[in-house]
Length: 501
Ligand SMILES: *[C@@H]1O[C@H](CO)[C@@H](O)[C@H](O)[C@H]1NC(C)=O
Ligand SMILES: *[C@@H]1O[C@H](CO)[C@@H](O)[C@H](O)[C@H]1NC(C)=O
Ligand SMILES: *[C@@H]1O[C@H](CO)[C@@H](O)[C@H](O)[C@H]1NC(C)=O
Ligand SMILES: *[C@@H]1O[C@H](CO)[C@@H](O)[C@H](O)[C@H]1NC(C)=O
Ligand SMILES: *[C@@H]1O[C@H](CO)[C@@H](O)[C@H](O)[C@H]1NC(C)=O
Ligand SMILES: *[C@@H]1O[C@H](CO)[C@@H](O)[C@H](O)[C@H]1NC(C)=O
Ligand SMILES: *[C@@H]1O[C@H](CO)[C@@H](O)[C@H](O)[C@H]1NC(C)=O
Image 1 (cartoon, rainbow, N blue to C red):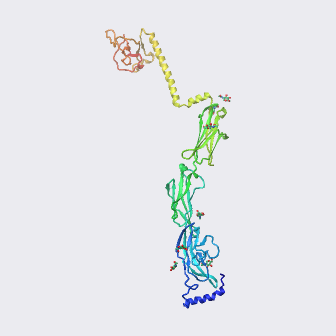
Image 2 (image 1 turned 90 degrees about the vertical axis):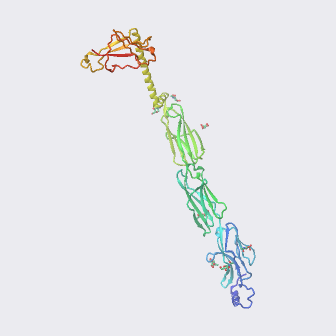
Image 3 (image 1 turned 30 degrees about the vertical axis):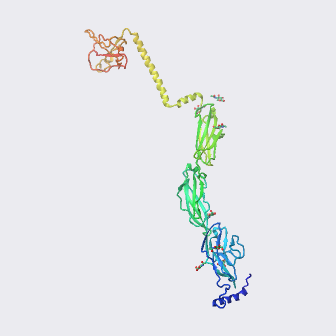
């Protein structure tokens, strides 16, 4: 019905006056009088995505004017539903009713939170004005947080470095939320999450940060951000594979086979062992004296048990003479990092040189042993020769054992005779070994003095006693004097000192 303000104004005023006076016809229902509007819901909470029902009923009749739903009051109000116009998400619960103005809002968004008013308008002189309004229904939209997302540093980092990880989840209502961090199911302590309001506080965003030191064995580790919220029956989890941010640099070593020095024209295999790296991207190049060469055989990379990678690269080199002192370098570029170089020098020997260097290279102690061995042999030969000479001498005078008297040289000893122990006349007694029937023999007679001399050898071999028969030698007791020539153990010499007269 098209409103006509000019005509409607007078009858309306009269009616109002009548009503106030309580004049005739007060019992009969008149428009505007006893008009009731009930908005029974004080507060309503609805899950995001679900349908919100806002109840409003009025009594029959009432003034000319529509019943509308407004969201908010005062400036910034918003007509959610009017009897004319299109409201895509809103529909009447009872279509066409003039008493039940309940509406349904489907697929509620967090932004739909607010206070809704059911309002009866009436035609006035100035157009339409609010005639009656309900007490308002406060609508809150409970919203589940989005699945948490864990983000790490923007670049890879090595073991031992501490890096922050952030977990974010948004769009939840109410504000209360709890965040737990886990690394491979072990709790990790973190700061309190930061909660920031979104869209007129209809929902909140959360951000939680944890700082962690990475380790070499974190290739298989998982970081979990667990969010619990009243709207959730089970916590939501955000996962993060630490391998996506970990970089473990390789250990590099070059092993020549056979090791230097190498005989000329032999084949040498240089193997570059690149081990324990992550991620698996690695480039291995070989340089010979700084010039790139071609690798013969590259294996892998293969995964080791800790999730780290290993690789071997091999070059085969013919040890020609001109390659002597060539430097072979294995250059490893891992994950676009600075190259890692490991070098080895090739030493080439001729076969003769090789033997010598081998001998030199073998332990110094071996050298000493061989020297000692040679010296011993020489000594043994010398001893044998001496023994032989002695034997020869002995066999020559076999029948006549000799005794020789040594006289001190007269020239020098005239004055120092007595003090010099060498200044003695002594006798060398050279005799044969002979088997004697008698074990020990001490013969005594008036004319001769006999002394029985026994070698220092053990008397066990008593058959081999050596005897010297001293005849015509005057033996007298005198204080012991050092022998001019000390006897060797087992020698068959005996010296007899004879004091000079
Ligand atoms: C609206 O509020 C008034 C006063 O606050 C109260 O008396 C009345 O019962 C309320 N109406 C409804 C429908 O809740
Ligand atoms: C709201 O209105 C609907 C539809 O008329 C009705 O089924 C429901 O019982 C009402 N709820 C309340 C709380 O008045
Ligand atoms: C709704 O807002 C408009 C301006 O945006 C204002 O003129 C009107 O009075 C408001 N209505 C109510 C019921 O607050
Ligand atoms: C809040 O969280 C939502 C969903 O996760 C996101 O789209 C939005 O950008 C966040 N807002 C802020 C200010 O972080
Ligand atoms: C090594 O090989 C080269 C060429 O094949 C040859 O001329 C040279 O005599 C060889 N040297 C030895 C020590 O065998
Ligand atoms: C590379 O090495 C593997 C194993 O050591 C061997 O089986 C293969 O034949 C080699 N390939 C070449 C081209 O040398
Ligand atoms: C290689 O160089 C070393 C050191 O300069 C030298 O002693 C050796 O004789 C060289 N070998 C050959 C095969 O020339």
